[in-house]
Image 1 (cartoon, helix red, strand yellow):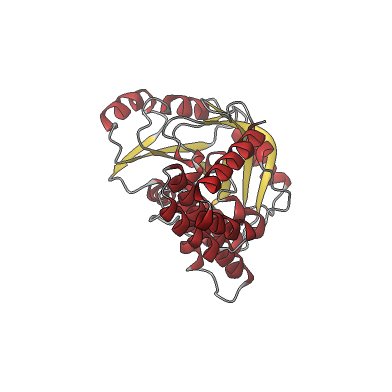
Image 2 (cartoon, helix red, strand yellow; image 1 turned 90 degrees about the vertical axis):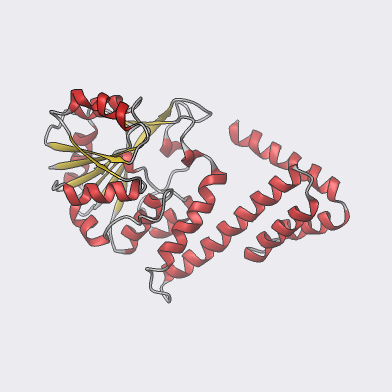
Length: 316
């Protein structure tokens, strides 16, 4: 009934926990496909997977990114439902049973994402995902758009019928490919819902790129630009996406301006903040540009102090 697709890349030290969490499921009607995405640790990975060969199918390919690995999984599996489980995340034993129960109780739903708890490292350790920035039901295109995420594939279950309707993931995207896909799903009329039950654990480690805003934001812009290409230009969604692209580009330029301020590159900072203001004009940016024109050192001090204060409030 369920096809579990696991892209594998530099995950040999984590994937045993992931596979064990599937094998411990109370619901048993599933298949597991591990897709080796040209991983540099292939030799070790194959050794780790040897003891699981009776329970999984294993395929290899060149490194083309997680979207390509998941697309291959879609092509090579047949389950009525599809789960995109990352190779370092963990399901609770009742994950599949509870997700399928949700579908039974909500038959019009096409995709359901459960809550999860972060673990491993960093300030998110022990916190639940949905408690950080919850989206109220019903889940809509407009609500997911500014999140640059919207759902975790690892803790989502999708009907194959909606996947066949939406199509494959965008393979040119190496990060935020799932964000692009959830928005396409909603645009296509798919219904996404959140389950408030905590049914998994999301691992945070040194290679977890999706927790670094300075990395995610430029990729979110790329994901939105790809999305814009498939939307009807005159649609409400296309207008919302154009606005979000401008806002995100402004934030990227603002981040670059701050980086240059830290280096006391005042001319470079001024150029970056000018781009930020051109993409999404605001009084804040205009005052920053004025300050960099006449009092650059003081402006640098004021911005750094404000950012430190905001970071402290956020972590409190």
